[in-house]
Image (tube, rainbow, N blue to C red; front, side):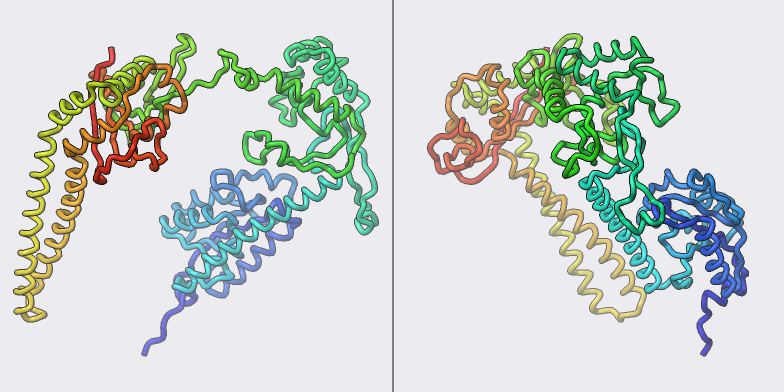
Length: 594
């Protein structure tokens, strides 16, 4: 019996060419000039044992948690003299995989490639598409069930390590902030760094010191002036900006860490940031801003404050609170809350109920400021290209007041008005042919399905009479498989048709449901109320607007629970129970929009 050939023997025969990939994280305290040569030496030893050779070298100094499109920039290599020739980073490695320069990629462990599972598996798949293997030397080279499981375990461990590292790092920063230590970065405007002896005696013996904030003689007075003018004198941020820019020698502006953003002038955001930074009260505060892109300010309850003052304050806590109270009072959000017409939030009554008649997607509310008019729109630039037909207009508009008038007219005539029963009869007469078609479709599909079942039974009888291995039996099995697929398809179509038939209203029950609704006077003021949206939801209200025909199709679906006092769905429509059979009935109407 021939022994199984191992991948090591295959490598020795083929003299496989390997590309080395190494990485040192910026979050670790490792020296890239030592770590990368060590990784390469371990990989060279493993490759040599299999008879292969390393022909290219790729490595990075960066975090393994980064997304793939942010990898391989090479910025982390600045300042290091690494004694390994570099053919590029991770992105370059992927691009070179199609060149045929190497047959496999080797790394010390899978977490050297990335600690982000999506990046790891994406790189592995892209390399595999080019016929290049990815081998971590702490895993078997031969691909098997066990090696695949081990790879996923190692990737999971790398992801777990990254999560634990982030959690512990955050906890450490929180603890340091509570103790009043500076969390990193440049000093706050109005302050400068001063060094103190490290509180850890062992680190103090090593000469390590910590940075604390102390008032800057040049800019501390500027911060005090900003708070005084804003709170005491009542200047706005724009007025403060003009004052500060009028004498830049007296009021030197903050400098952005990015040289490209430095203007040498005061901006509104710079003034705003000073007025809203609680560190000027003398406390150390961390987690004011989100760590993601954009840096939005977190809610104050998520801020981490030091337990005691950490540095000399430039303003009192009372002054800071008054500045924030003044900012809130001047803010447009407060104006909206106080009921100012220019800032009041508009309620779109038909939102989520109204759909575009061309693409079937929900239309959204929009205010055209020039006309101060509310519209419902369907814009193709806000839709996925695969969800809209090619002939869809760039923009579909429907004025809210015009649509509201038609909705009120429908409710008044078809549901809550004295002539609603006659309107219902006209609607049911229009859908009468639909009911006949639904019944005919169910009968047709049922007949076809019975015929298929009979043919299957006959084939099964014929198959039992045949020898197991002859050609006729194989043909019968193939035909049975085709008929089985066809039967499943017809069964699904029948179930769909039966559901559609159930939706066809029964005239007698539908009239009883409508008659049970109360007689109401409906006007536009009621429609404009947010509570009326609950009524529309209880009525299962639906509307579609066809811009080509300028036609609004309205449909409501009544259920017995709607008129039952214990249903809890719409108190406006509650009447004594009438003992209806459980069924669903629809009412519809079309109206033109002028």
